[in-house]
Length: 515
Image (cartoon, rainbow, N blue to C red; front, top):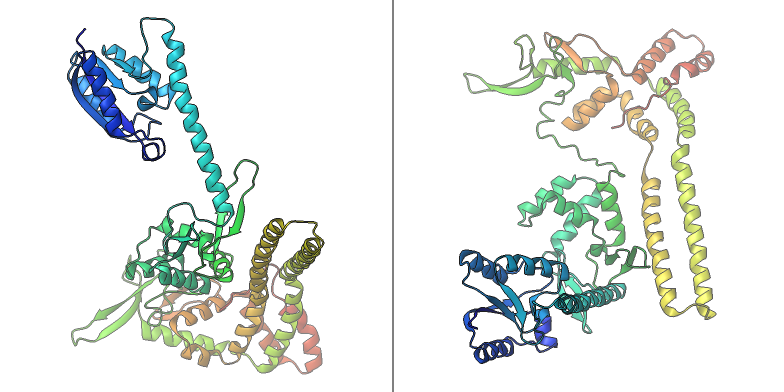
């Protein structure tokens, strides 16, 4: 019987290297088989692709040819069934679809007689065995990769800032030419002075391109601190172990950068390119529309620039910057208080705010206790190791976990100890300023001026003819003004001090703004 045949030979790289499934050998067997049976070979397709699925380039060409040339092909011939597929489910579907096109699939070394009912059992066996073998290979590969990563090896593609390296035949990483940029990114994030987007743009300007998500993944990746994150596998939980590769940043910098990224530490950089010129921008509103006034410079006929605060929706709100700034300084001069008033105010606030700082102190105490427990655990592990109760491998693993946790707790503790409560900041920065606020305001930059005004005024200001129409002082400033008036009327200092303690206390829930 004359048959038109497409010969299909396939290897994967591992099979060709390890099992000897060479392409020339397969081609020889296929051609000899067709010669002995007088089959006509239409074409020979060579595949270098995995048989896990039929998403293979050459196989797609075969199917395209068959669909285009109906009845031109009678048989697709392989050496063995594992050359055809290693997935029984997909294989049976493809065989059925080819039968609908009157095309048969068969092999040289494992031929089947499809007219016999027994062929179904044999076909299932031939297709199942390669799939089982493939699953076992996959399992062995995963086990090997897991063991390698547990020993500190790196088994995947190198992350940015690193390149692959062999250390005593073990796969690991070494810093690449991009490592200094990675270090700079972590340092900027850890400083708390930059947002993540600002750091990402800074890297982009230096030719180091990252997407927004790519930058977040980079900062969160512990590999840059010399660690390897191992996901849960079988009975092993998630772990963070020390890798064989050198770190680009210290653990302290890594944890601090991530705290900033998560918002646990305040970002103290306030970017505003024109804040020195327009410190009141964002603090003024239009009484008609209720929208914030903007600011701009207007070029006059004599080529001089005059600056204004204005509402973009109406012509009435159009105030010269110089006139507005002068009136603001007049208001500040009116709220300067005496040293006597400030000293009393400071003493009362310190007593009140010490009671409010309970949460932070409690958290510090809790962390210190946890670190004491970890120190005892380290000492206990050392004793057990010296007494030969645990192996050196178990000792190193447990010590690594304890040290990692202690580093994390120390980083958190340092942040809490360095952090001043909003109340302490208020006392330290705001109180001295109130004694000579006008001078302080004049010397400050635009950003600081805006913060000063935010402490003093409780709402946005409304202007009339370049002057503030009303002064909505914050509760704290209003208390100070009341106390100043009482001092001026008082005749006996002791009686005043006693009577004013209640008036100095800010209203419940008041959290003074900080500079």
